[in-house]
Image (tube, rainbow, N blue to C red; front, side):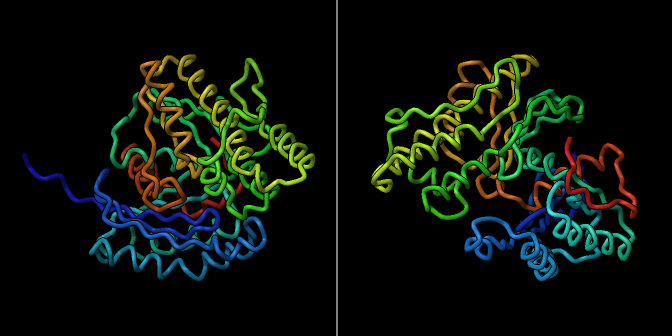
Length: 335
């Protein structure tokens, strides 16, 4: 068989506090993926500071791009397509990547495709797994979003989302209550390994009859519980374990319900919180009982990265999608 023509896609991701570029060959051969994070700059503030994030993106976009090309062993003129996040996210950060992508596209006279950051998180799975147009339900769990979508013929329909805090945001706020630091997700997961999830009862809102989420109630319950304690430190592992267990159980219940209702046998998960091993283990276990396959991104591709944007852009381009230079950043973009 003749060798498949080499087609190189550059993926650019600057939606928040990461500056990332990746080079993807065709649809599955990732040649490079470089990420520069400004996370350490935000820790002292307990959350992302937009101005710091956008300035970091502006400072690092060119060196990250150069490093991605170097690691891929390609030249600028070898690139065939550019994929770039245009929303949702912080407007300042988004504009850095979008402007850089437009300038490259114009200079090289090659097409570019604006990518929805949320769709990109799901496409992180398709670098190594092929689902294509097969219907599936997708779960996006991150610091800014908690959403369930139905995908059919490469089109997405939003069928469930958080009504208040995103799951990652809830982890951050509980970690702050316990003086554990930022970001809260990895810290709470680590502490929870040494705790008993059954010793303390925290109830997460279930919203019967809906695929929506609500995490503000359990966050408040944790706060009230902490206020009653004389020695919080000795109960931190159990608090973390109980909080994490309650949140994960609701997430698993909602996405399994969505799969049943839509009669699909595949669940695709993306977003930073998808790196949580407790969520991975619990969802995989429950899905297996239902005969459902679950796809998770590799841990290092669960965070914001250029590879997922490149993969999504390649798929869109193959379906005839192109973007115009009039495309603007859209901080509130949804599905």
